[in-house]
Length: 443
Image 1 (tube, rainbow, N blue to C red):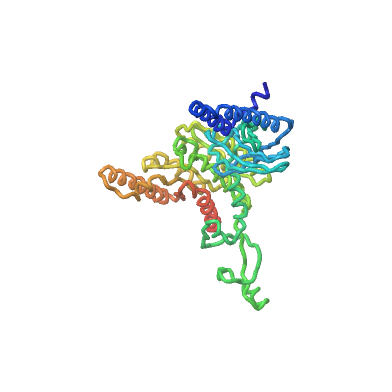
Image 2 (cartoon, helix red, strand yellow):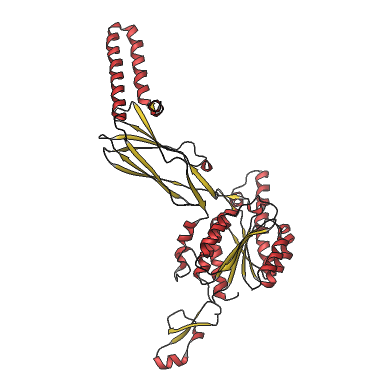
């Protein structure tokens, strides 16, 4: 029974069989061909038996192993490798059908390769998950054919392998050194001109072009007979909280990811930058209630704690309760902190309903509201209109885009900082804003 389940007839066998049937039809017209056709049938059966012997005489004809990362990075391309080892003493053709997790909804996965006799080969492909959670791989099916190509023998490996999908730790590695780099243009980070400096003295150093002339140390300059300046460092151990709205306004999808997942990925990267800048990073999420709380600290295990918390954020996308958010911040965050609020406002009415609570938070803390541009509207705005309906759609789209700019101005009026960004630029823009605040020393 096991032998029958692993034996498959290839398309080439059926092509030959169709050819033989065609010759039998021709034999009715040309009777002299009849015996020759039967010889072809005998040859086909012989080669079929030989092919079976070639593939099944070796007990372990082929070995395969699927190598996956310890965890997948949400929203990024993750490399999956398949190692193949051919134990046959002849080259084989392999067709790989990997049963990848159902979340990807891929039904036509197939890789065809040739492996030399007694050789090894590594084959790779990429997967891009778009939601956090557990991903179960099925069997790794490898169909092996000999040079005769009449049949295939199926080998199955690595059944029910589970790999968790975490927030985008690949982005975390990408920007890992961003807090220390003086040349941030390569990352798309804007340099912020320092309009003041904190009072934490670091060292006296020799003047180089670009240093603030106001920091010249005249006594050290006289002693060394060269310009010397006082160097100050940013204040450390300041508390930074990321508040993630997981209500229904964050359900909108862009590029396969919801706004909530973009916010989670950005929070992970930003937490790493905050800790590298010697500040304390914390976070919490909210919708009907405030949960997933990590208090701002600067411990060595803080990043792992934040990563696990972000991984476990789950939501039914209820209506967000900003009054509960305000009360919770008032109760639990006593020290003045930077609070980066990831949310989304589409209209001024939506902002005005929550504005009293935002103003209340901004009285005690430095509040930055991060919300999103609807990039789908750009295609409508930039499209050339030819009908009245298209003109109407374009006007409505421009109205929504204009309201986003009005929201920025309205928040600015009450001393609330804001970041209006496209989903794909969220991480960079959030880091920009944090570095700007640190550079200006306004926390």
